[in-house]
Amino acid sequence: MTPDVSALQTLPQERMRTKQTEIFLTVRGSVKMKIAMGCDPNAADMKLHMIEYVRSLGHEVVDFGSLDPIYAKVAIAVGEAVAAGEFDRGILFCGTGLGVMLAANKVRGCYAAVVSDVYSAQRACLSNNCNVITIGSQVTGIKIAESMIKEYLSCTYEHNERSGAKVDAIVEYAEKHSC
Image (cartoon, rainbow, N blue to C red; front, side, top):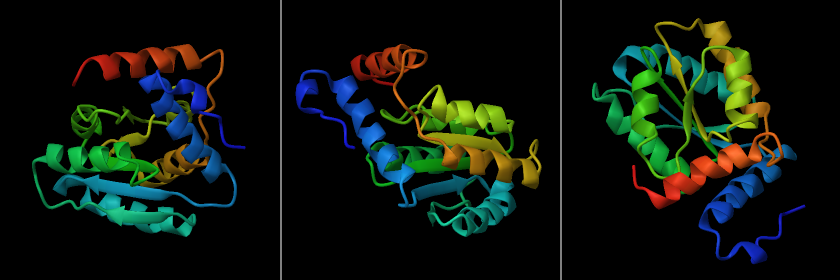
């Protein structure tokens, strides 16, 4: 069931949240997601492995590259593509996951979280409606990264009493102030 957004025409942050919810509700069925993925040169091996892993889960993956040592460029490109709705979600890699997270979060409409375990990957979606996760290739093993990505891609954000007001406050602030 698609949410009725006709009553939300005067609330831009609600429209944005609802747009993301519509995408996630579609994914919850049998439709697979389109994932944007990128990294810096230090994380190229992990990214290449994860592209194949995510494809094995049935999702489409587009590689945004890994050759530029200025990780902010690929992080911003992934963030812009996800925020524009061209991709359902994004996954970024660098040595710690922190640099690409900081860069991606400068993009309006991109909500990136660095994840370090399966629970944080799950909560990035369920509690925070993050549309991008970032992973540190120098601090995370391949199997843990696979588990985090699988969990993140299996979750669907649902606006609710527990997290809804928190996510709304973040979106409202982002809409009023440019990054």
